[in-house]
Image 1 (cartoon, rainbow, N blue to C red):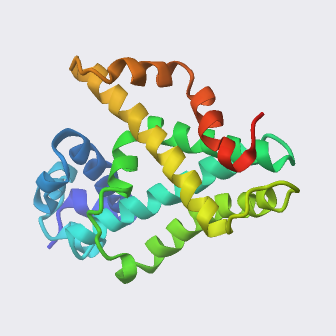
Image 2: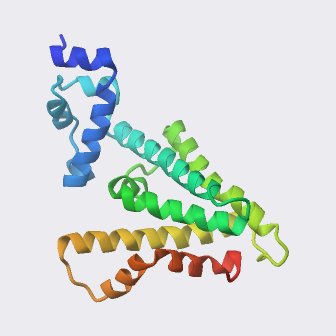
Length: 215
């Protein structure tokens, strides 16, 4: 028998959202390893078995969080690139800015997405599609970039790998800087990271020059 609180949750359809939000909070505070379905149920005020009606396992819950993250990343990248007009070089740089903005605004989700906690995503069709769609935004822009006269002789896949390495690496460094600043840890590379934080646009353009050319 479900509790009154649990019944209300199912009636309004908000238990799933509550579990996802509470899981993300728990991961931010204690890490993925400490995430507990039982603790989430207790926090939501439902029976220990209630979360399993939405997520058959902790792994399924994590897959749902990551799927949602890729969807939000796709929207951030697409919105940023669409806002700058038709020039493919500027669209690519804007997509990079959208990627950085998403990472900095959603550090827990971003780190979870690329943590490898789901080592094989073949069991999760929605997660596969979300990741392909997010990456596809950039690949579509790169097709236009590489079609220009004088563009580097790379396949879209090769260029995509280079761009992702550059932008993801920059995003990771920016998050590293945020975390170290929050914990007051002083490390030798922090001066360089601080410079990146002051002007990530400059770093992004510099990193992209091999694909877009100087500009």
